[in-house]
Amino acid sequence: MTRREIEQLDRSLPKPNPYTRWVNRAHTRNGKSARLIHPSGLSLFAPSLGWQVVKSFADERQPLPDCVSQEPWRRAHHSLLNPDQPDLRVALAHMLSLPASRPQSLLLQALMICNGTTCESLASLCGYEVEVIKYYDSLFCNVLDRKQDRAYIDHIYLQKSPAADLGQRRGNHDSQIDLLALAYKSRRVDAVLTAAGVAPPDREPIPLATLYQQIRRNYLLSALRGLSIREATEAENPALKPAVRIIRESQDQTPSSGQKQIPDYDPVAAIQREIEKVHRRGAGGSAEN
Image 1 (cartoon, helix red, strand yellow):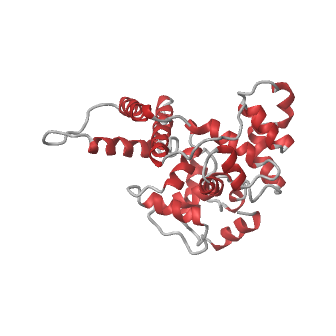
Image 2 (cartoon, one colour):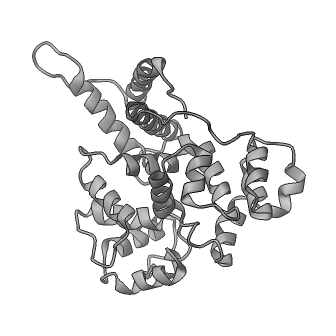
Image 3 (tube, one colour):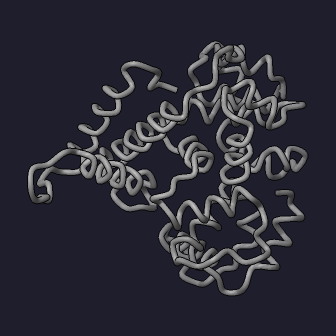
């Protein structure tokens, strides 16, 4: 969405609405003033605006208003309201936003800002479908429509990767700051790919079953990481809820003799066991991204 479209969305959303309430809860949770605020200024600099809007409405079981017309937003909202009917594009886009997918998302974010990149070229470079790139950008980045919005780009890229530090960090290809800073400074696809040590993929499309295994694995890994540092709420650990659902589905598919029992293990052990299952199921194919 462009800056003008976001400003129009802010004017069109009913007041109050689930997104306004979500912003104010986050505002209070971060220890700021309890005074109610209007999210319009924050919306302009929120990369995950799409996800925040659809999730806030889905959490309150409310339909999206007519002013929200973007297909990725509407499909994400439907997917959140109907977790038993997973939308692969939404799930893959969300997977890319999780900590376990940080290397892939950083490369994608770095390439997004480069000159001439489109959803089609990014899909070719990163090995994802075009629609997945569109959904990830629409829900979690909003870079492709705002490359020329200097204030927004500076806010996103300089906040994560000060360009002034680039020379001090040169040569460390594993540095997350290097990759984003290089992209911000050069805007060149070849420079980013060289720094990342990768080349455009030359492979067959990944089977759907493998993609689902990748999604499950990344949700589980992200949830486990969050629990290891005592992040137990949905706001702190957004992968925890999908991870619990994966474990429950796995239990439902496990043959049992007679009545079901409530397992007495702790969540960390449960997630670790489920990760081992995913690894075993993916042994015949690629479980890594």
